Length: 202
Image (cartoon, rainbow, N blue to C red; front, side, top):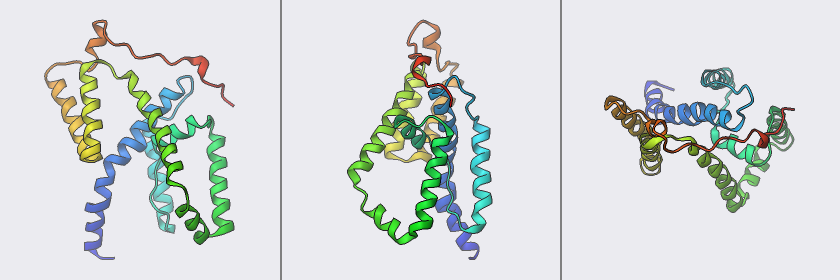
């Protein structure tokens, strides 16, 4: 591995992945956890970022592929019934057990045979759960920023959408516009989370 390989990996892999990891794996995950479990002590942005960083630094030396948290996984797992950390521990144990018992070849064949329609349904369920969180966006300025980012990510990618959304927010701030000023004037109010719908811990 020479300097050219390092530069190629930095430009083509690391930098484009940075906004995806920052937004999806850190900021959005922290916000979604707060929305889904308002009565619980959910992890902060700093805690999630530290978790991602330490897990990758501690396992890269043994060949582990870089990984992170994700709000899509959290949304899908919540939608299908997961409510506590024990569900994630059980899922991890099952994955490690299959890897040790079967090895890579059978697992790769199983992944290749996985029906795309089932995967599509799982992704759709997670997407609906994520989209529902937009109900607490307040005011016209907030909606403009949200729609700018959502539209841009479909056409231009996450990095460009991140820059466009930040630019829109900065323009509104410089213009002296509050992102939720319509709420203060008696406009849109987000739907409150019903604590009765959240299961008790344990």
